[in-house]
Image 1 (cartoon, rainbow, N blue to C red):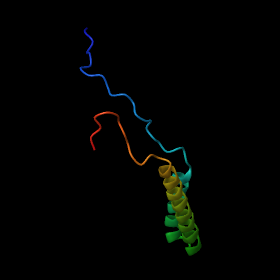
Image 2: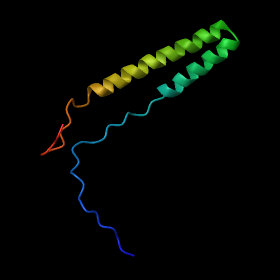
Image 3: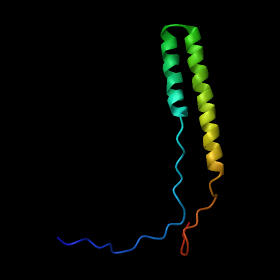
Image 4: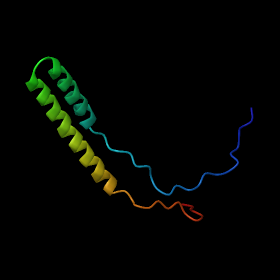
Length: 84
């Protein structure tokens, strides 16, 4: 068997890929929605608790994401010949 040789070498890495850190907020967000749906059929108090959990986790999740994005560079430069 012959090995396939790449025709071009990949460009050098300019920066690392940013991935968000692990978080339990999506889980608790889903719990809040679930409790709210259960509250629709059982009790207004359960519905309110579920909605409060959902709203709190959503606001925290958005704030965390905005803080993470604020630390990213505004412009991406990939080296010579970079075309925008």
